[in-house]
Length: 503
Image (cartoon, rainbow, N blue to C red; front, side):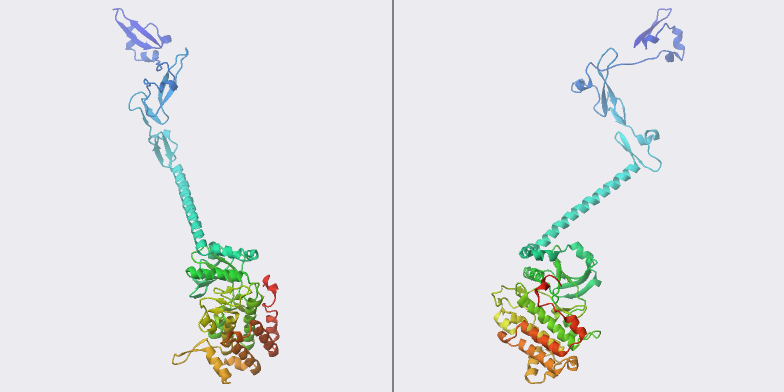
């Protein structure tokens, strides 16, 4: 940088700033030339102090305004140091004086942004954003929010399932089943998701039955098996023990004439059981709702009686641990596609040690089927199941319900009426018309005598279920049952231990 001086004839002097190498003698008249400034370039080159930026920023004399400025180290050809101040990218103004560098609105000048006509330009401090990127960001944010919401709900649901599992006796069930590792392989713990899908979200069209204990739905598992899913009503602590007891009892039984339990679900608000699907309803329905499509013939009634007796014989005498059912009744006898009997509902059943002969419990059961001796003593024996079976046998013979009511609405007992007709030798007054028509007098009377002995008030005088099975088998053989009936009833699943490993 240099300084030029112009001298006129009258010794008046003028000074100007210009590049040193470009200065030459100029007359005063040259200043009247408009192109004068174009002929003498001016270059300003300066630096602040001798310190570089790193040192200057910590000194009291630092000159750059603190708002949106950059410090740039400066060194000339002679090695002279110092620094300069500049605005950051996206800002403009004087970096030395207040207010310093201010934001450039790139959206006002199309040359400063690359937003196309379909995208909205949004100015930001030092930058700008295009609407295309904002929409993408919003979409990503929405996805993240939905994922986080779903994750929170999944964790909340998992915690709730854990609470339900414990409340529904999951730990107790695991403890019960752990005593027999083989049962754990056949008794599955289903997830709530599996059963929800199997029942089409518990569609009302899938309901098979509803009662005081809960609702039974028809469902299909992923492997194609058709099942009955029993959704219990809310259980108090006492009922919970019955539920777990039913799971444990049925996990130990795998015979043809006892309904098969596939597993249960404990991670829902109320526990659920998953059974094999039995299509033809209950024996109670067949007897008392008069199914005209398939009326109960004498041969079929005799076969059903034998199958029920066989299942009870197995539970009492052939199971690894003796089991008392404690609620035998026609409503707990299911009929499959071939009208074979399936004993069900083991909620109040009990396993007992082989050296015990009875259970002392609070009286439970169904009025009309309840053993009077058990009712008075609270001691339940295998002969209490025999008494209940006797009531079912009378139902099969008469087609009447255990509790009778006449035209005057007076309530009476079917067993009392049956025993009275036996005593007065007028049994045919009470028998079902189909039994009278199809049953031979000799075998009908033989079955009636079995029922009579099962109903003795003194339990010790009643026959065992083994004796009942043998007598009923004998009657069926002498009855000359048709080949079709015989074939369907061969190897009734109650008498061999092989049934423990297969249907």
